[in-house]
Amino acid sequence: MKKRQFIFVLVALCAAFAEEQTFSKKELYSRARDALKTALETKNKERAEQAFGYLRTNVSQGAPLTRYEEYLVNMELGDYETAIPIYVDLRRRKLDPEYRREEEARVQVEDSLSKYLQRGLIPLTKDKADSLYALIDKSDVSVETKKLYLNLLYSEMMFKDYDVGMAFIGAAKDYMMYHPTALYSEFLTKHRIISAVKNWWRREIEFRNDSLKHKYYTGGIGAHVYMWHGFLSGDVADFWDDEMGDAFLFDLTMRVWRISVNVFLSTGLMIEPKEGDYSSGKTEDESYGLTFGFTAFDSRYLRIEPFAGLGFTRYRYAGFGTESFDNVFGGNVDFRVYASKPTYVGEMTFAIDLRLKYMVQLGEFDGGFDTGSSLVVADGLSANRHTFAIGLGVELW
Image (cartoon, rainbow, N blue to C red; front, side, top):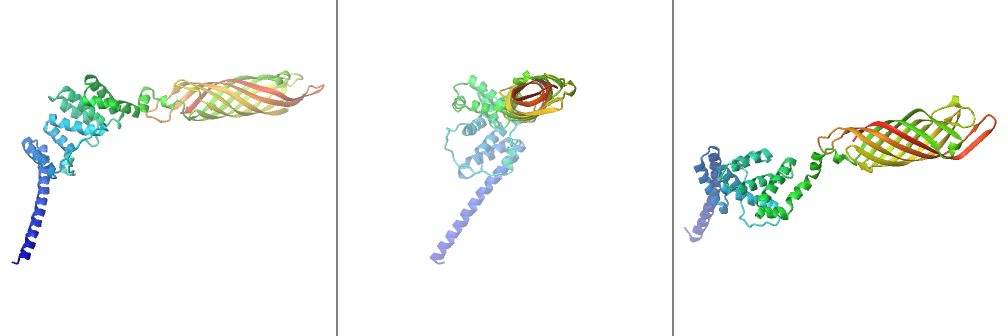
């Protein structure tokens, strides 16, 4: 064989051998992972430790075994003294933004072993975390390590579940109380992790303490029906008498945050000239209005809301009539006699209110009347309608 041909064949054989060696390593790693999974399932600890040891020894050569899998395998083998420091290191990487640690790159694969090791852990629940802690609690590891492990388990879910977040805060405070100088206590304090969890669940905490608190100063729609009594004041009182007839007052409210828009309709006040006899022709006046309110104070049982707006009044008397455009001012004081409790933040709530209302309508009266002996013209008189009302209403809040 010529020299050039010999070299070519030699190179080809070396390349084939190298490819076969690479393939063989991958196959060996795969078989080791399969063997480890089978051994763990069958509780064959000796066989599991052999396969596990082979994978750990060859991590630098590309054997697929992540740090998280290493932690889980040690947990399966009951080697908690080795498992927990690995887990602590992994969690610190997530919780401590200043923590840096150089480590060899690891190959990650998804196979039957990875699925077996993570069974029941995706997603991690509080029940599963508590069951993992129960294993550690029965072991011989130190009390400090036990507390730290529970706290770190909860830290995986502290922003996902309110109950776990509160459990994390409790466990963290307990750990820091008894181990204030520990490394974990230091970076919990430095990075204000407990405060971050509290702030994350702030609305939920408030909701649990007072399920209606998040609704104060918020929107809704409502309707109220009132009994009321009122009278006229101003210049018009020199010429006209007033008395109450069949009083009726109704209003509708739409509220967005602190601002409300209200429309009202009322009837009931009757007027007649002081001169002349018009008693047979008495008719209730009609009044309408649009007002804008502002919730100055709101709580579980009490809401105070001043308002202002525009109104229109139609005065009727003895076949005569006049109209007035009014400036409206007043206030509502609501007592919530009942409010259904929401089951989650933002849920619609039904409420029943007892409302006290005062309203003054500042208008101008233009009208005349015949006394029988003379015609009296009374134009441009100030006419102020005062309303004192008590009503019952319902709201979707």
